[in-house]
Amino acid sequence: MAADAPTGGEPGVQSFVLSNIYLANGGDQDQCATPDTGDLDRYFAMLSPVEQASFVDKGKRQALETRMNEHFRFRRLYLRGDNASSVIFPSGFDPKAVPTPEQALAIGALNGFPKGTGRLAFQKREVVYSACSNPRDFPMLGKGFRTYDGKIAAGMNLDGKVGKLDFTRSDGVAGIDNRLWRAIGCVATFRENGKEEIARKTLMSARAPTLIELRGIDDARNDPDVSVTVYAVSEPLTRDGRGDVLARATFTPDPDPQLRATAQGRIVDGVLVTDPFDLVLNYKEQILDAPRHIRGARLRAVLKPDGTVEGSIYGYYTLDSFYASVEQMTQNGANLSGLSCPGIRRAIDRLADGYKDHRTGRYTAISSAYNFVGVRAFVAPARQVAQAGDGQ
Image (tube, rainbow, N blue to C red; front, side):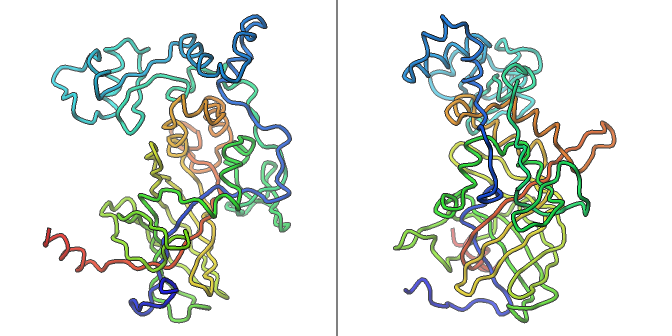
């Protein structure tokens, strides 16, 4: 196939565009006896038997959701279109502008939201108040949240210790730090997204992919010193005639410096490993725009003979950036996915184990493990990017 043929490139450089970055689970030995239920099912359980009878039919889920919204006084303000005509905006604010988080609070206050609430949602086109935007206001919906109490999980020993909440990996390695899986490993949607057979066929963040570039390669099988840069690129992923990600396509680096990080690495028997470094990964999917902030990240990647790459990212996912991906689903999305926003928020806060804030004494990040897959790619040189811009 033409897509598989070498097309040149800069000597000593290999680049890979990632088609998916997904939660790693522990494989066949990773079990969760009873998956957690979401906010909507918890609300149903709060109703009296007589009230439950009115909503027991699955066709009544939308009516049940409406009842829950009314019960908890959830609010949703549309900032665009005809529905925005009744919204009260702060003096001097342009309704066509994208509000800041501070302006969202002001909009919420002017429109009867509880004090200090009002979060942007749906690509910043709505201001909402719900159990997802303000999970700590609704502890009753997180009651009984099921965390993962198994002993097997994927990951790495990040702190060099073996603790009571650590896992054993399926290959027998102990001391595995993956508190994020401890927190959400019994949530059905996360378990489903982490299945290898599903993840490898799914394009995630296809409109804002991540690229890994290796420089200074003298020997692709064994090299003690290579430079590894991870950054976002501007072009979306494209499928080839077989339905796979098109290999050896050319991508342009995203100009945002926050979406670029470099670390030193080494290749041993075709396996790349890096030193720890802080990393921000684009995560744009449907209505989500929630960059993943991973502190102390370590990459391990197998550079395969066919030009593909597969590996893992181990590190400490900041709590707020992880929860942003849950919150931005909106309450309706959480209900459809069977998520409990208050339950997840409480679990990650309680189980956080990385980067303590010395002012508050609380940890700000949680150990995690993600897998990724990708194919060979090329990066447009800076001079070509500049020339393309001059020609527009």
